[in-house]
Length: 205
Image 1 (tube, helix red, strand yellow):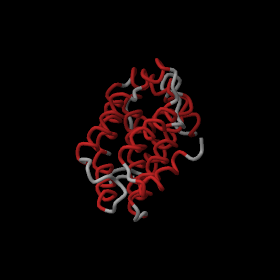
Image 2 (cartoon, rainbow, N blue to C red; image 1 turned 90 degrees about the vertical axis):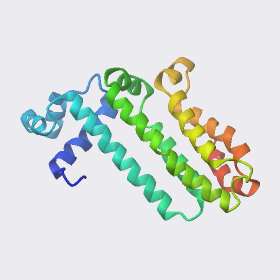
Image 3 (cartoon, rainbow, N blue to C red; image 1 turned 135 degrees about the horizontal axis):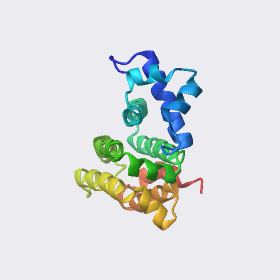
């Protein structure tokens, strides 16, 4: 919760995002949210004057929670190779929890909200850089790769390629695609020592 948000606003945003992932933006309405919360539409509109504002704020609220959890994962694990594993597992877990059709609807109906999600993903470039830079210093990542370039390439490939239409056109599940993408890059990025940890991502196949 931000300093300017009340507990009531936070509750609306939390329940709104859950409804969005459960029903999709096409079926999501302020009317249905109002009924589910046992709250008047007037109260919801007091904080969020339109459906688009509510969707935008709900997604922003969710992204804020994701960022906090990622920072916590990184801060509480001293081994950067294990940091990489835990962060990737966390990301893949969240990706698999939302249907690709609903993501496509969100992108088509609320492009400004989708842009916020893309900006959030690109901002994770710094987290990824820090993890791999520390991993390289500790011998988990090859010394002959430029971590600055790798971090930029990695996040931009994820952001530009892994779009809803890509998964729908190629009949791919997002978690499977990212899982295999990670397998492809990790073999050339991590040392044998580092792969002892990274291989944990690929054991449960």
